[in-house]
Length: 363
Ligand SMILES: [Cu+2]
Image 1 (cartoon, rainbow, N blue to C red):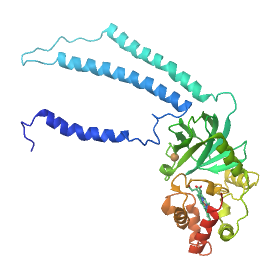
Image 2 (image 1 turned 30 degrees about the horizontal axis):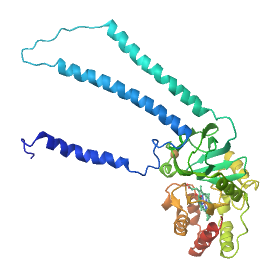
Image 3 (image 1 turned 45 degrees about the horizontal axis):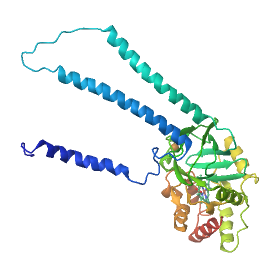
């Protein structure tokens, strides 16, 4: 039992020090998904608005709590014989005041709120890069309509250029969120939301689905990679090329790829113009359920796979092909795992090695 005479401040310290340590842990210099580290105009406007509302709320908090504390202390019962203070009911002046004061606060806050909504909802004039984002359970598809590029989970953009993003979903509602670049916007089936953002610094920005969308929701991440303009052009040129015909050990992997039915879901060997992507999408929309899957044509140009979950190493690919369900529970490729029970379709060790070589050759 604690010593009753132990000084109060010691007890206070025993309680507050661990609390402060805990809070300070939040100040870790790495903050890949912090909304307080805005790196583009949209995130900055949203942060500015947040600050205005935050300080308005702090002001209201201090006034209300101050008045409460004052009342509690000033009018407390001091002595046993204190009598009940005069009781009264209704005070028109006070009531009008506390109706008007919040109305004024709300009216003042409405001005920057509405301007920010206009600013962030209107794509600025001038040349912008267009990207169509399609959310799938549980990965991201990025199409660049002007450039004939289709890729997954890693969205390359040129630094300093406005990106106009059209958001749609192929299944349930998801939400597009890149905390350092832009706030959350829902992706809704059969409804397109349009947003824009711009990255002012080159670098990698972390994004994440922000609307619960099923079992692997927490593993539905993505990256926005802001490249210097020349690097972006080089990336686009690479994505537009047909990868060279697989040769050597990769050719064996390609045979397995076709034999084992990977092509039922995955586009490969070309992006747009192959017709594969579109044909499959149409089938999917008509309810002839074939799951769309990431375009693998330039798989080895990505740093990560499975929606930002794994870095693209041989070892991780091996794990993924062996049992995608164990790596990312619930994912749609696990459909294939069902087929594994069919001995004809099952992947042997050799198949997996060949597939890894093939996939890693798809620069
Ligand atoms: Cu989600």
